[in-house]
Length: 357
Ligand SMILES: *Cc1c(COP(=O)(O)O)cnc(C)c1O
Image (cartoon, rainbow, N blue to C red; front, side, top):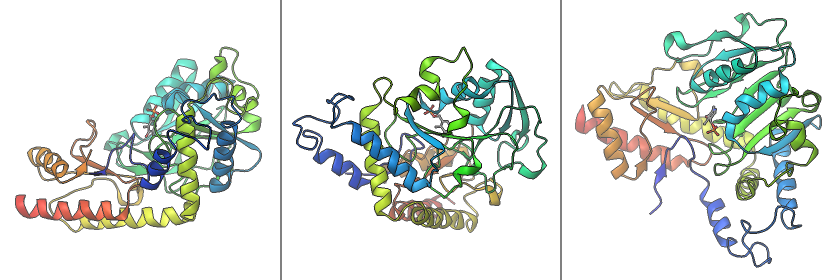
């Protein structure tokens, strides 16, 4: 039996996509081989990468002056790739709004003067600092942010206007809402939250920014290496790219990002409204900054939180345990989570409240 999976990542994929992959798993388009068995140099494989890139461009309206890369190493590898490709003068600004942006900042410090120019750690990352009041440095090579904070359940509603290229970790919200790519120098995202199985990472970078990586930058981490080779410099994560392409096709069929965003807002609205109208459950994020992808919440006690996680699992609602830094529960409701999944969660929450309040 399929369950509703609220995992923060790797996470749910659309059922139709899994079924399609299953259908052609043993024989990919008449080749008599699985897509996981063919060479990345095979002429059956090249169109997959090309189509995935074209679909990304179409869905996110990515202009020609940006490259779209499929790389490995996860978003965490990009924490190093960003300074190694961009930190020419050895200085950069970082906004720290959660665990991952903090890790990105700490990684940046290995390579130069990575300066934390704003942070929301004073209130346990329950808000996003006012982007109009941040004292950005004139001499920075770039400004780094994380647009959706997976663990703490916050997101930027407005992006900072920066003179220097804005670099954004969008791992847990890419393709969930419309963004103006032109506002960013670089966008990167591990695919396992909203796009594909683990193993592939998307990098969208303005072409003029990738020309001059630091001399110490490893060949594999140079965005230019991948851009010059159509993401096929070495063996790419073939299956993950294939799956990403199926998800992108599926998203196009649903009407694109504008349409999925309406559904995402609706799903998150149902859950937040229910939590706000309950005296049993709490979400401590400041309302304007609430993520529509990751919704952390608690019951009145740690014991009840534990009981909730156990009983919800038995009811077919899995992976609701919160991150250890926050505790309680977290419902990750990415693009692939159907409205019925959120409704089933709310029905369970009501029942649990009745039995335990
Ligand atoms: C999950 C996540 C990461 C880490 O991704 P990996 O692919 O595991 O390295 C980084 N940033 C954000 C915002 C995430 O949600």
